[in-house]
Length: 241
Image 1 (spheres, rainbow, N blue to C red):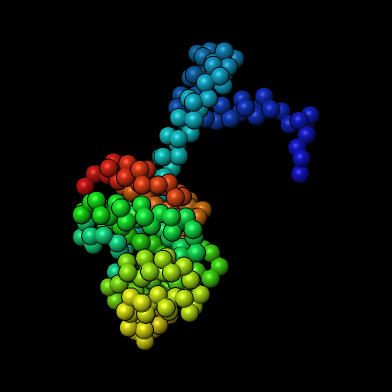
Image 2: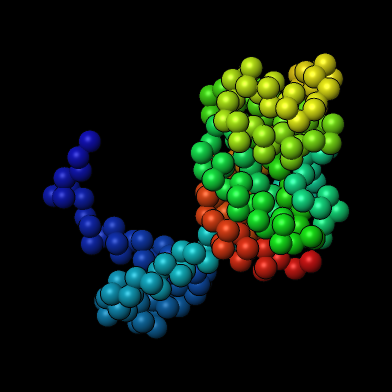
C-alpha cells in the first residue's frame, strides 16, 4: 500500500515525534515548562532536526531504560540455568545469557565468539537458553537439555553445530558422538521438565523483547543478534562482579 504525500503531513509527523521525545526525555511537566519558556519554538525544533544525533541519544537512553525494566520483570530467574545447560565455569562470578537455536546460522557464527570469551575468562559462566524458533529445531533443543542433564551440554552443543544436521537422525548422531546414554537421553528429552524449560525460555525472550536468535544478556544490557566478540566483551566488561 502506497501512502500519498498529499494526505500525510510530513512536517506535522516530525513535529509530533519531536514533542513525544521531549516529553519522554524530560517528563511531561518538563516539556510543558520548556514550552512555556518559549524555548520550544521553531528555532529549537529546527536545531534539533538539524542535529538528529540528539534525538538518537534520547531514543537510545529510553531503549536502555526499557531494557532495564524488562530485565527487572524476569529477575534473577533468567540467570539460573537449567541443570547442566552452561558453558564455561558453572560457578563463575560473571554471567552471560545466550538464547540459541541450532538451525540459526548466526548462532553458529556466534559460537566462536562465545568460545573465545570463555577461554579468556575463567570466571565467565554462559547460561544457555534453548529457544527453538526455526522449524525442526525442537528436537535438537530437547536433546541439548537432555545432554545437560548428563553433564555433556557443551560437548553436544558444539558437536551439533559442527555436524550441521538437525534432523532426528542427525540429532541422535551428535548425541552418540559425545557419548550420551541414549536410552536416558530420549526419556529426558521427552520429559515434562524439558518441555517446561522451553516454555520458560520463550517467556523470557518475549518479556525481554527479543525477536530472534542469537540474543544475549550481560548484566542489565540486552543484545540482539550476532554482534561479534568485541561487543560481547565490552558488555561483559561493564558488568560488576
